[in-house]
Length: 174
Image 1 (cartoon, helix red, strand yellow):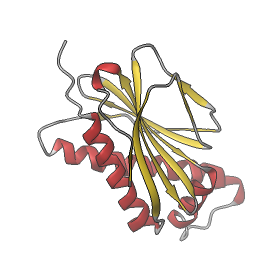
Image 2 (image 1 turned 30 degrees about the horizontal axis):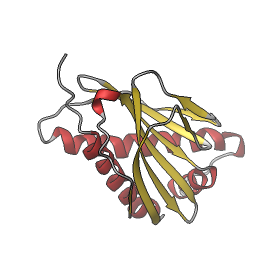
Image 3 (image 1 turned 90 degrees about the vertical axis):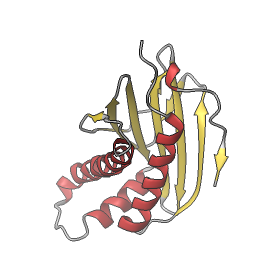
Image 4 (image 1 turned 180 degrees about the vertical axis):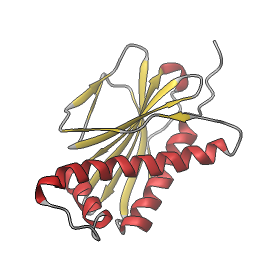
């Protein structure tokens, strides 16, 4: 079996930095607090809307961005402010906003890592609404970052085989 080549800590940090930058620069939404931690739980509780992608190196890793409803609505309003969207299409565009956000942020963060010799493939994002939780499969672990804004919260979750994770990801609050 080949050694894990994804540095979970570095990836979570890159995603957090890119997400804070995207929210601030592209959407005008300031992140007020943030924290990172390794979750040793059996399930992750999800927020209102969650966008999920898989990243494939020599092991599969899932990345999930889980948004409070108020935050994804604010992001949608800013993201689509120039568009005239019919009310019956609004939910579809809110979901597409979440998919676009994760696609842009994860793509850029992984491009940074690829520039250093690592090529990581990505799946297209899928978006789920009002899911309650994700159960942990045996041997899987979660690493998470939580971001808070005046419009609600966002959790970034990395879900993968336990061997990708070590237990040194301390709780960090900024």
